[in-house]
Image 1: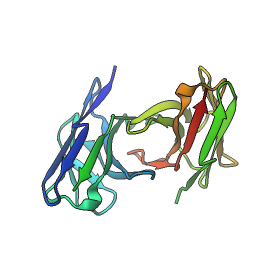
Image 2: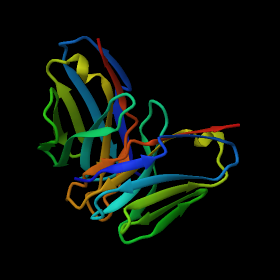
Image 3: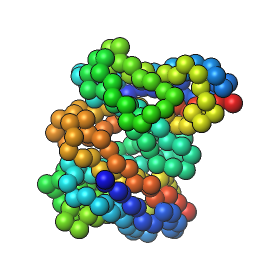
Image 4: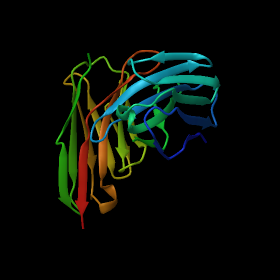
Length: 113
Length: 113
């Protein structure tokens, strides 16, 4: 069966520090991968998606970037965090075929102080 | 642009009640519709997925219906339990290859003993 992991689960970082959040998927190959952000009390916002290694598409301009160094690894990064980057970050994977159902990871709670 | 509206925004019911959560969308050109559950501080758990050609899906005490022509979906929960307390999200997938999702704002459900 497929599983999706995210780490860390929680993170507190000072303003201006770098960021690296990791997401890995097991049990499937060549998945579509997604990074979402969910601000407190608000809906989910798609940040990045990837249909293959090294292929990254950005949905909204921001202080963040994404990379996909391996087929089942998706990384969300920032060189200098802003206070407004505080949020709940969710990674998801989808088959990209058929119904394209998406499955979400447990999320990372990021607080920037 | 697809817009998804969920009504009510919050719902509080006594244990044992049957209840209905509503979702409406503006563009009927959808690929599928998913209902997710999100517990506080957690990721999203997929409950049911209805493909665009289907009318309903059932899983245990849950039944989801889809009426594309009227732009509506309902999630029916039978014999509600305190463990059903969570935020329920209605999510639509468009026809793009990467499966971009459009999220409703969610219905916060509280089932009290």
